[in-house]
Image (tube, rainbow, N blue to C red):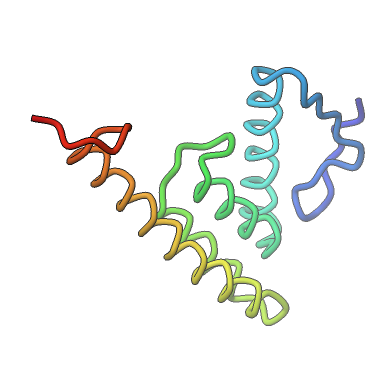
Length: 117
């Protein structure tokens, strides 16, 4: 596959194989590397947005809501990305609250929803 990087960090001809999770993880990690390079070298709003999304959902990177917010904020410095970033931050807030609620539920009631005791 041609892994030549565009300015926004995307590959010109990405080669993803959805059948193999291990290969997908490696491809996501590679994508994160390209996005980091584009974010640092070109100040790409798109690359920062994608890094925020990857951190929010734990795709190829560790799930980290504060770091996701940081990348979304950096993307939001571009006037072209303002609306997308505002929406991403709003939905990430809901996502983070949902995750905390699920963790609380499992901690108190277990995965089956039955009170432990």
